[in-house]
Length: 215
Image (cartoon, rainbow, N blue to C red; front, side, top):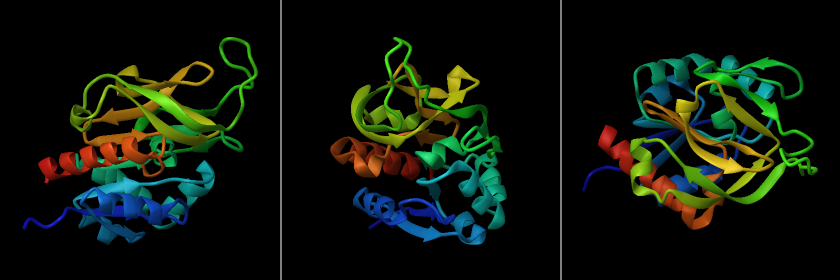
């Protein structure tokens, strides 16, 4: 039997690591939670979960040398999956509690939802609950997924990519925003697959199949 691909789940002192690891196990992967850059380099793919404040997450990544490890990983074209804050951290900056630089791996910024939607109605922030994601563009991970599905969101900030070609999924909440982004072997989603029941399991199964093809 072929060994399950080893997935480095990045531990930077924030995030729902255990629930993400269990979801990856159900997809037939072997997750290893670690904050050691050397251990991460030995993995087949990386997953960056995220729950918490943008500035704290960036500071913790830098303190552990994980920011450079991530940049090296993506420069080598190796598979990466970002979840929620793991999507937002890829961008140039965020205005969460001030202006803070991100990893700068994708051009764009992260901003808080406005108080009112595009229709002028008050918008409840944070955005919590199930919402329909419409996938667009092309990426190997999307090949096995329906073009529309419902996923679970919990966030007060949203990414505003500078390049529309980096957007591979959109969702409507007071207007359309990026629910999934991708470039080469980096794929990230604003929602939580580990909380999204069958839809989330389908996405992680697709991630597992993609990782096996890349290995």
